[in-house]
Length: 365
Image 1 (cartoon, rainbow, N blue to C red):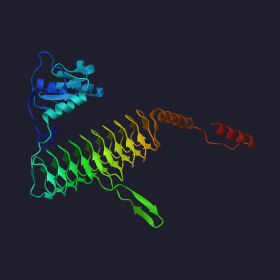
Image 2 (image 1 turned 90 degrees about the horizontal axis):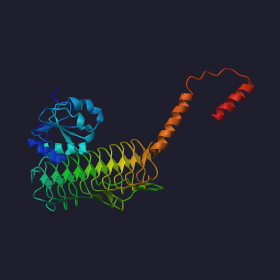
Image 3 (image 1 turned 135 degrees about the vertical axis):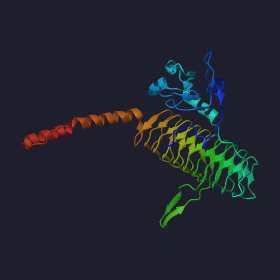
Image 4 (image 1 turned 120 degrees about the vertical axis):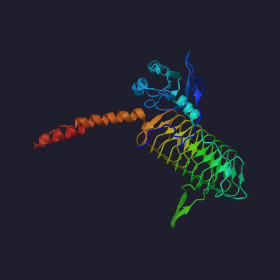
């Protein structure tokens, strides 16, 4: 088995080395007095060496912190005293965000290489900025607009009239139609954006497809995961708010509106015309019925089945979904009932009077 390497140069861009001051600046941490040194990468606590920057964001890994060989460790103030003497503590109240910035410093995104691959198919009526990169076998149809600094991966299809703002990245074999994207949107491989929504009318002779005449409008800095599908609207637009993150294998139905910075985890499905207000979080495998409103900063647990509106700031779990405290109260009651039935002796023949008394006892329980 190959040695575990964080940031294998075969797959990831590399930059550096960087001084401790450079790292501290991106982490937004003070440089301890008298500390210095140069660093050439990042690594987990367990395997980090003196030239690595590492981090701790979970107290359960305290033992790994105390034994680490990392040259510098990004930590919360509460854990700074546990950083071993051979390591420099870079103290910040947001260690995970600091780690993200440090990792990006050493491993920046692969730069765009402007140009159109000879195997790409670009319609003469499309507008492609000269600074964009179009990979092999991608297709850009008539009227599409590809903004500055965009990258279109191999086999991706940008449908007629689709607009990509500056700095967008479209993964291999993704398809986009009827969509307008803002800046720095990342569509991961295999995603399907803008296809017809699930709309039909029932008639005596069968189903009648309803034309889906809306679009998909995607705000700035959105990421949409691999093999996720976002249906275009029926008469209104499907909208994904700025900064939102959709995991792999998510389904977004027609006319759905996501506010800013929403999170939808893998295998969740949101039915048509439902609205998620800003900062809503939806757990994996959750199902949201149509025409609902999920309030600002509400959280829906994994595998929940949501069939009614959820107020702002609420936490809901279960199927049907209910407030978290109510759900766990119900679970506790069920456990007590189950425990009360354990170890009961088998019934023995009894007189009619005894049988009636037992029946009354059962009704009371």
